[in-house]
Image (cartoon, rainbow, N blue to C red; front, side, top):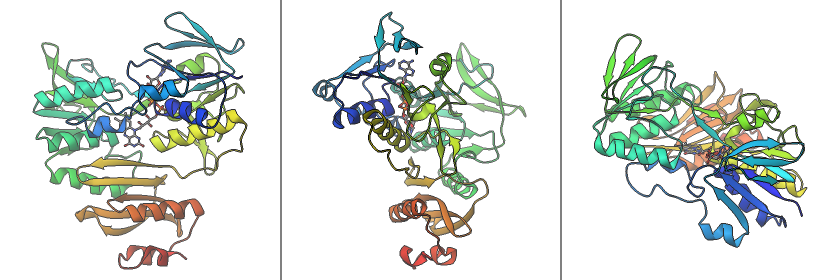
Length: 401
Ligand code: FAD
């Protein structure tokens, strides 16, 4: 019977372990994780850090026992010996494999300025980070957030709703520049500002200044000082592909895999945030989302079990900011042609991005029907009539050409 080792007990790795057993894999399944906590949901870390339950386990401990999945936590895999098909862990042991799956995720991009290591400066990836952030926000009145990405904006919304004075500092000319359409950036900026959050764009951080080892201010290149009691750094994440690179696997800003989660070694697969994979026309993209991690877990199951490959899915994810339940499907092109349906100022809208009538992405807030329909239209390459789609009184199906 074949032995499957999974490195990384995060969303992708833990999902794969369960699905693989469910699909009938008869051999040993071992999950290695360097964090101390059981695999958990990361999305609540930026949405529920102020109050409520942070520890949302993907599965209870009994699940792994019942399914005969060995979980080894608090130990790091430090080397892969591809010739011997064996991995070595920091505590000194080594383990053989028939199939190895790398699901090592990503780590926060460090802020490359002096003072970034002062106390009161946090990034947000793990449960441990979220516990620190919770304390920071409970005790402090002013929070500066470096980076107007999804994590930064989600934290901004929660902190602001809890009475914290919040300043978001974004280097680009708009928030979410890398991932959202210009229109969505504009709508979200207005939404946050209307609730009292200060958002600075085109603002470059040159250092963090402190007193007695604690952070006191974020300093910008024009000399502006943003006084703060805590600083969240949310400037993106870097793939944890060092282990794969050291083993000679093909890496290019992430482990390069195909549409079936295979690396260039037939015994090694990779899934989740650490990977770059072909989408649509074949360009390599690195997606950082739960649906993508789950999709690749299903791909890996099919590959390991020798089943027919899974069909490609439309990428999607969600974000919560104040009362806005955002759901986004497809990849927003650099210069989208956009149809607005609904009322952005009322917080209920869908932005449909199309290329000559062919829908390619939808960004929605509190419009679940538009999101669902949009996702299906993208999957099927449906052509739409922009004018009819923009008219909120016209049923969605009547906008199909
Ligand atoms: P991870 O979940 O990061 O797991 C990788 C694990 O591998 C980690 O535990 C890591 O410590 C471990 N590891 C790494 N190297 C080794 C090693 N050598 N040995 C042993 N263990 C190792 N996505 C959404 O779709 N919607 C959201 O709303 C959303 N919100 C988010 C909010 C926050 C604060 C964060 C951080 C992420 C959010 N995401 C969201 C993204 C989502 O959580 C990730 O896409 C998902 O966790 C990726 O799963 P993964 O298994 O690839 O990586």
